[in-house]
Length: 377
Ligand SMILES: *[C@@H]1O[C@H](CO)[C@@H](O)[C@H](O)[C@H]1NC(C)=O
Ligand SMILES: *[C@@H]1O[C@H](CO)[C@@H](O)[C@H](O)[C@H]1NC(C)=O
Ligand SMILES: *[C@@H]1O[C@H](CO)[C@@H](O)[C@H](O)[C@H]1NC(C)=O
Image (cartoon, rainbow, N blue to C red; front, top):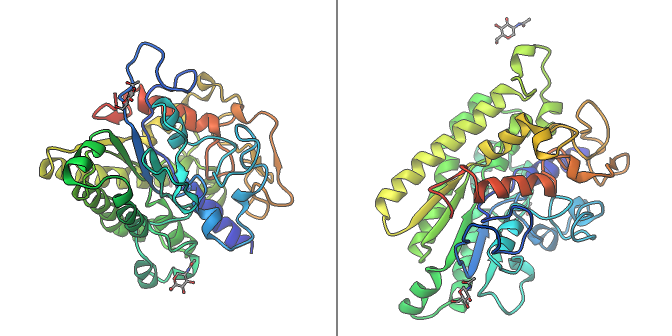
């Protein structure tokens, strides 16, 4: 059970990220400030626990879906919502920056879907189940609601968004698509099965290729503004730091993160960016952006105090002890764990996922900073 919980947690961890918020600086709510926010009138998002706003909790009969319980949600919503954080995710800050309602999860959507829907599912993978059968990791799969299933949901929903080609063109000209972060769980599940970094590296072209293929499928369905999101520096996550400790100091960078795992994350991101660049050439009419979650997260990992993270970026707010306050046997929400009183002073929430404050920092740098290219605004 502990292993299953950990798998879930990690799955959730990888899920999200993204970004482009348009000016979240100080607050939410669109407008304000000197910068003009592009007027997107709808937003659709795909991914894993970094972006899920409730689909996993609705879809999973598993009672140990801890993200559906306190203290998840304690900060902003004051109740668990199925988000893997204490509060809002990057996707929420983006929605607020554009003056949109928070995206409703596809599996519990209401009637009005024309302002946006969130298809992301915690634990979701870029690859479909046969890939995991092939590498012998099927038993680690936390959900079958992979990226291709999420795209299928979007295609089913499309007739309720627009009808004629002209109508659709108009609709999609003001719609933003967030693709990912997704793929992190594909690697997590492989690592859980004891696969090596070299094994994982050999999956990168396939996994990053699946994310690029999804982006292309959305463009073919009419999407014009898309943000591909890279993966976070997993070598700085307290889960990886705890599960893969090293006695050799040279395995850690100056920030205290595991170099090999961060190199691996950067490798995935580089391959993904190459593939997005090819898509830009094939579809010049589409605006394909890349949100560098890795760079955005490293900026606060390296200078945590500057972002108000008094406890550094590596220690989790909610956990069960140990050097990083991450204990796989007592992860956040499980008996034996406890939650900090000041989540905004931490970047890391549960070992895998960030706090609302961590996501806010990423959202800000993606909207306003140099971490989205081409620029979001
Ligand atoms: C954004 O566009 C919608 C629909 O065209 C319009 O009703 C709304 O006023 C616009 N908002 C801003 C801030 O420009
Ligand atoms: C995924 O699908 C397979 C085959 O339909 C099924 O056996 C398995 O239980 C499913 N796994 C999850 C986590 O839903
Ligand atoms: C630590 O790792 C470095 C680089 O991999 C290696 O050169 C060195 O021999 C290692 N030191 C120990 C004590 O294992």
